[in-house]
Amino acid sequence: MTRITILNEQELRGLLKLDTATIECIEEAFRLLETKPVVMPPILSFEIPEHQVRLMLKPLMSRAFPPLLLR
Image (tube, rainbow, N blue to C red):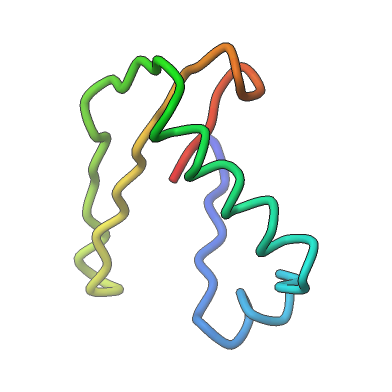
């Protein structure tokens, strides 16, 4: 069975580096999303009741991006 790791906000913030370069990359991705053709399959959603969590993955495919993006 696949192992799933659940992180709280503090753990996630400790793993992610939100610097100027990262913010610029995110801004550019949203600009491209507005101006380039994309394929957006349905949102994937599942709940983890024991942790009171709902995980929603929003897949996106576009020639302007890597093969698959998740939001």
